[in-house]
Length: 334
Image (spheres, one colour):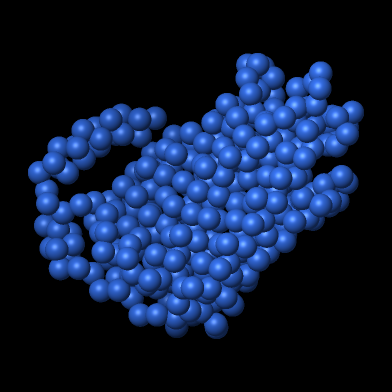
C-alpha cells in the first residue's frame, strides 16, 4: 500500500511542480515590466497614460488567447494544451496558423466557440462580473504603486526608489498571495467559495484605503500591498472554484478561460483609467503628477472592490453544475 501511495504522489508531484513553474513564469512576465514603467516613460519622453500600454498590451493579448486556449484544452486535453503553451518561438508561427484555421472553421460551423448559454448561469455570471470589477480595481495597485514609490521625495511624496527597490515594495503582495490561496481553498471547502470571494473584495478595498490615506511612509505601503495580496489570493482561488463547480466538467476550460478574460479586461481598463487620473495634473515645472491624483485613483479602486463584494454576495454559495448543452457535446464529440 505504501508503494502505491508513493507512486501516486510521484505521479501528481511532477505535474504540480510543472504547473507551479508555469504560473510563476506567467506572473513574472505580468509584473516585471511594472517597476520599469517610469524609466521607460523617461527614456521615450512619453506620458504616463501612454507608457501604461506596455502593461495593457500584455493583458489584452492574454484576454484574447485565454478563451481560445481554454476551449482547445477541453477538446484535446489540458496537458497537451499546457505543453503547447510552454513551447517561449514556435508559438508565434502557431498563432498565425491558428488564426487562419480558426477564421475558416468559424465561418463554416454553426456552433460558436463560447457557449453563450453557459455564461447566463447565475454562478458563472456573477463570478464573471465580479472578476471584471476585481480586475479593474486590483490592477490599479500593480500600475500605480511602483510609480508612486519611485517619485523623488522633493515632489512632496514618494521615496525616490530605484527600479529594484520599487520591486521590493511588491514582495509583501507576492508573499501573502502564496499563503492566502491555500487558506481560501480550506475555507471554501467548508463554507462554499462565496465567503472567500466576498472576503477577497473586502480585503482589497481595505488595502486601497490604506494606500489612499497613508502612503507617506514605506511601512504603510508594504502593509497595503500585504493586505491586497491576501485579497488577490482569496479572489483567484475563489473565482476558479466557483466557476469549476458551476459547469459541466467538459466545459471547465471554456468557463475558466472566459473568467480570466473578464479579469484581464477589467485590469486593462483599470490600469488605463488609473494612469489617466494620475496623469491629469502635474506639479508646476516638473514631470511629477500631483499627489491627489494617486489618492483619487486609490479611492476609485477601493470603491470598485466594494462594488465587487456586493456582486459576489448576489451569487450562490453552493450549487450544482450546469449541464452541458446537447449541441456543444455533439460538437466536442466530432
